[in-house]
Image (spheres, helix red, strand yellow):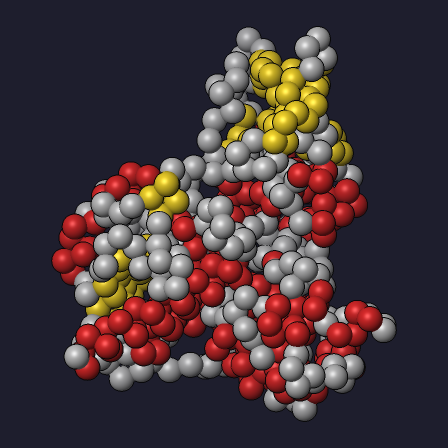
Length: 460
């Protein structure tokens, strides 16, 4: 692939763990020859089901055909015009369940490797410092966006192309949200997220990092400064397990743990040799596979339900098993054990059975009396979901249900007409699936609906 020197110019310095072989990308990209051969397998369907299966509606046959013809810039532009975080999604999307799962070749041979081809084209654009988009003619309107994750970045990119003056307020040191901090390096290196952020910055979007809305700037001030605000703040920290011993050194928040591996802040000595991960979602898998790469010899995922109820994707489950992660189903933590120095030494668990369904339709786990047992561990990683930014939501005085912002499903407008919301802050029962690609589409949708509303007001 040409233009490899451009990678050094575009990418920020990787953390020590990114450089470590254990944290390099686990899945290698296609070579030039492999990409062209794979692109030529595509049937370029007229009414392509893969397009309908993509939440952002990428014209997949078109971008693949451009790879086959050697037009890599055109291919990358096609991808990124529909999905502003298309480079990240090429690595983290569950393509087997989305575009590749819908490929017509599933019925005869094997599906086109759409994710790998998307990665090939966007990697070419990164390496060659391709300028894919330009800012629109200024229209005099100002939009403030809270959060720079996939939803916020996508909304900002679209609005900048419409000519809005866009300012993103990000609490973290670097922009990119989940893509920068929350997905393990061997699946998504930070350099990919940084490139997508740079694409937005080049459209004159002002990204103010280390700026926490509600602390460094009030919600009221934000509403005064901007014609419209988009809330794309994602979710917060992992909640407590509410069991004895949770205070011991070595009990870790999975989100912060993954973040620390990307920043090079956690040592192999700290994590130890034996690790228990509580939960069976995407973040639990990341916590477990990170632990393996940090040198843990025995990693167990403890889940109070069965494999059928886990929220991690099948490909993540298989990846973890290949790494040697052990799964203990129908197992719940009861208390964490520590030594006199305050360090974790073990975890007492109890076996569960599934009882009657709860309000969410899932059968509730019920403890089996007298089934307690103890595992020796050096660290416990909590991955039981994330809390909501209720305080922030309340500052905007928005209607919500337990931290899930209520929006009009068509427009993504909140109870405050001047505030739209997208991404994890609106993710709840009945509102899509929490994926990077879904957040990107919601960011686009919020931008389009906002623009439509303001344009209509100007006309009237």
